[in-house]
Length: 233
Image (cartoon, rainbow, N blue to C red; front, side, top):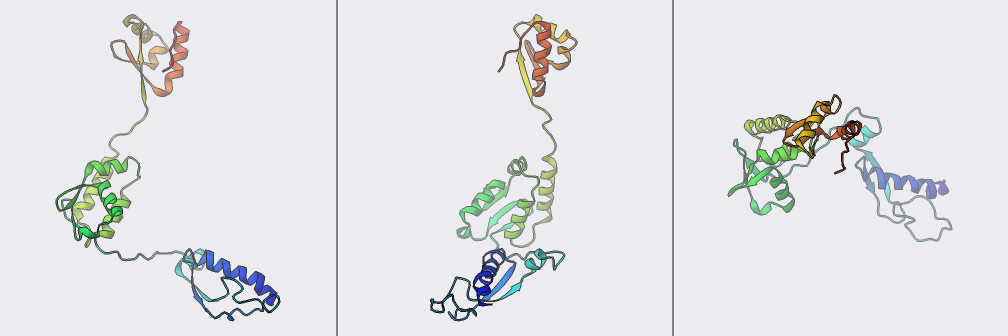
């Protein structure tokens, strides 16, 4: 039993302490008494503690641990209550409650979504649209505003966020286009009249044709059949 405690037991303690407790799956209770660990050392004369995990006395499974271990069907995280940093009004104005408490991280977050004003900031449709060029939605913006606002967000602000999110999908890039410079107006007309090349290109203006980026090789093949080349960009 003593040997099991010195090998397997300490290994189990290390897993409980370093892995499961670290991610919040367990609460631990420890004992600082050097003689708390129940097993004798290898020769009985080594100094205590045997390891950094000797004092682990009890552990308790947390709600997160119960979910991870299959003892609970769901897990609802608890959130620490952060002090309010600002008050958002119905027009999207953000008034700082204590400007001295605004950290650099909070300033960067606010400037990503709002323009500076004398009283603090004002939500910017343009900046919100910029966020949505990469983000799927404004859920993180809304969560931050709700978390640090003094009270619930005004309904008008929630409507603004929803409207901006909807308008961010007003236009969509389907394909990129290439412009093709042709040496003469006569050759432009010849290409447009060709049964294959003419279906690939569109006449933009003068001696310039327009094609989808993914049709470059198709146009090159068609021009080659006509006896012409398409030089690389």
